[in-house]
Length: 368
Ligand SMILES: *Cc1c(COP(=O)(O)O)cnc(C)c1O
Image (cartoon, rainbow, N blue to C red; front, top):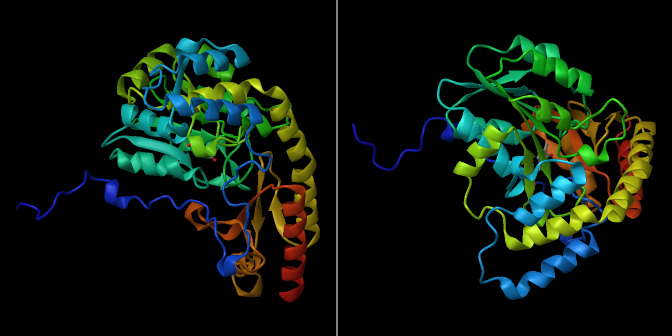
């Protein structure tokens, strides 16, 4: 039988399209947008200047190898630029890795509250998602290892994870890696690594450097404040960098992103300011919201997960609607199997104080 219209490949229609954080509120209020983990401090002024300086060169193709950017990343972290691949956001790199290493009949493993792009990329390539439970909203390495089968091609681990904000120590990551076959790819998505202040945390650079089956992805969308430019990178074993370079678009990173990325990664003072801001406000917001009687999962990122009631006046939906009436946009996380929670990005001092004041009002009005 012939279909009446083109039919996409198996898996694609099983995808629930990614729903980005909202950015408007009803009533024309100026929104306080805390829904996408963007930095409240903005991009480095040097990155903005580098971006503007490119305006006269828009007719020219970018350097397809992103040489200047890979060089700057290599200098910053002490890495071989030949093993760095840049992408249109780290999302593109997650998709390319899945495209290269998983297909029909293969399994891709990640945790129940793991970043949604893993599932989308898995289904888009006809592979089968396998989901491991978490413990207290944290990756459970034993639960992951228990679900490894001969068909497991890729294991995705966001560390710290979004939207939970939790992390596992590098020893646990090593234990996970040790339990995988050498032909299973472990992808360490370290989108929030710059924010983490824990002695037992590592993004995974050494693991990539000393093994053949681990890739670390990073992004310029979070602490660097370049989400609008779409820029990420992966540090890979040489053979995997070679694979990504064969299948990526020849000009997948724009010249503006390359220039701004170099300036951003070299502006260490701006990064330090951003870390200091988070160090101050992450604990303050977590404590103040906790004092109101709402449970907050301890986070090491620039966002927190706030737990509401399963139903009634203090449900996540009720909280979300109340906050929106005050101009505050958080992220509903039902798509992450967290229907009773909201994710809040740490904002400016003014934003954070507005959130705590609004939630105090909400809690008062919804007394149990
Ligand atoms: C934000 C985020 C990314 C980054 O995506 P980009 O495509 O680089 O903007 C990757 N992984 C996780 C877990 C994230 O939260």
